Length: 219
Picture 1 (cartoon, rainbow, N blue to C red):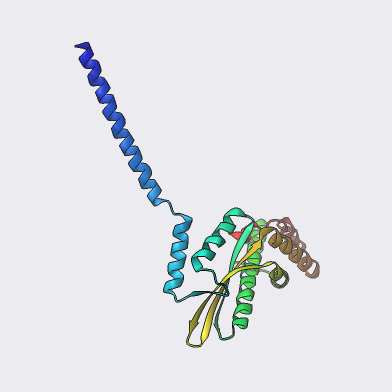
Picture 2: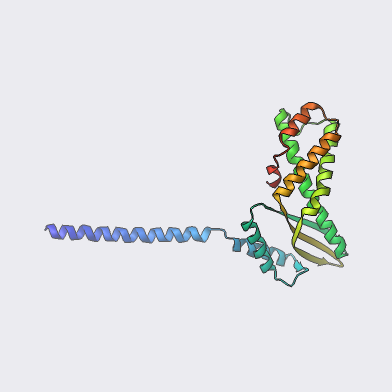
């Protein structure tokens, strides 16, 4: 009968909706399970440090607490750039800390120099692996040195880790630095190094194009 057919269609539609809902919910659950959360990152980092014999140093806070706080700061302020300075084989904590700070500055300064050189060479149509004039190497060394010396005061320590091995230490310090400070110090270092250099005008012109473009440092 007509009523019977209508009821069958309604029942069929109801079953289809139920099945689709179950499949959809199952898929959503599967996707949610695969999402890599900040808590997963914290757990991995904690396991890495614990298995490696590391301990948090210089604070009464727990490692989980400091890591959570650290990542929260990065989420809330996208202008913060994370740097990790490492030192090994040091007996004195004072020496460990000074070496870790220096290592962080060297790392950032080296990235800055490599980024500027890469952009300059590409702008000039020169292969990055090609030999460059001695004058350019002198300019780059001066630029890196000036930047490294000036950026040190802008690094803000967030927390430190220590590992003791047979009377000597390995030490890590997590720093934050504001990207605007990096860009400012980068520009100043390039400008001063350029003025003091004997660079060919072709190189100088290419360098000047990227004086305000420091984004590659953070990659």
